[in-house]
Image 1 (cartoon, rainbow, N blue to C red):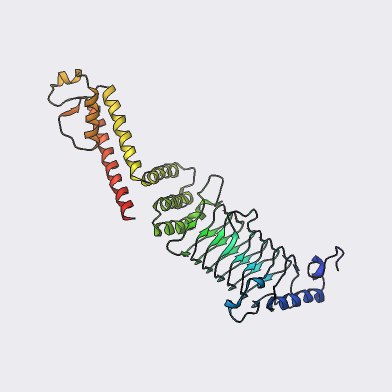
Image 2 (cartoon, rainbow, N blue to C red):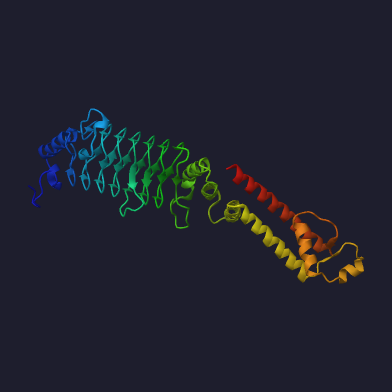
Length: 388
């Protein structure tokens, strides 16, 4: 027993000499391969003197994954790995619980196989976390949406070539170092709502299953979710492609805008005039593309605005009126409205015209050009919706 009254498996002092450390690891490996529940809650794992750790262990020792039962779930909740947490090639026949585990010197789950769900919420990875080529046969839970303690990665989080057969949850997870999801395969929904990337974020060649959701937060001025805006480009591109594939055009357009913002910020800077003008115009286009009714609303506003201008300034007169009389002509309200409509729609019947003053001709031409753009936009948005 330790001075605190803890047994050798839970005492922080159990790694001060090789015999005690070896005793802890021999018992851990024996329990891991037994068909009984592998309960390691609040254990303190010192460095393994033999350097074997849990490498290649088949938890529950089941002949077939279908033999796994809920009673054989391995629990590491609250455990502390004082040395390396080595699970390379390890197979978990049932759900694996690593909730609130402290990995002090790094964790290696390279080529690990999780037959059922893996729970890592609240886990703290103080060293490098390597899940390269790991397979999550069902779900990977590092930060469920309602959890108060998501996982934290203080150094590199490596999820390269990872395969997740169902949902992957990284809500509110903090990646303080590089986050590498290159070539990862997500067959279910993958959610990064509230996640923060303080280091490099790489999602190159990551894939998704058609119809599934890939979700990231909107870029903010306070450096969230990507402290370096340019790092969000590949992430937003992945989410955009997934949204287009499931025909969610509104969401896809927003991710397309955010992808452009990330790329433009790296080239021109967020404070440059070019970036601000481009971002503003693209936001307006995204807003318009969310429905044909919005384009029609813009057209109605333009028609009414020019109607008020023509009416208040007496800018319209009949086409057959001599020039001297045209200048003194008092424009009627219905004439101004009619002229604004036919000019906006580029019909131009010729029964009314702007007064023979040079600037009114350019005003009418400007309205006609705006009408052509709005009408063309309406056709594009409507066709896009129908095709989707």
